[in-house]
Image (cartoon, rainbow, N blue to C red; front, side, top):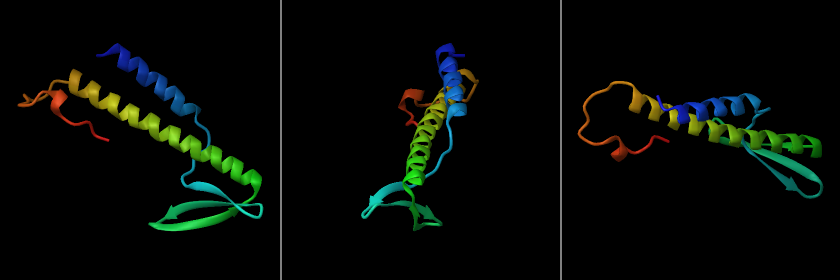
Length: 103
């Protein structure tokens, strides 16, 4: 078992647990003085008017969501590497380095 990858995975788990509220979408300022949150619902775009305070918190939640996605992507890559390198498997014609990483 690769201890460096295992330690990195544990660090990512802690980072994941520390993420606050999450949301998808985007927030944009709409003159005069209003904010809009735009997001997808069943493949269709929806918009909601927000106050300045709501926009601030929604922006933070969207940033948290982007961090969450990055952490989960890295955790997935580490998991795949650990399984392929440490769990007995089948004989391969191609070396693991030739197999593209799943995204």
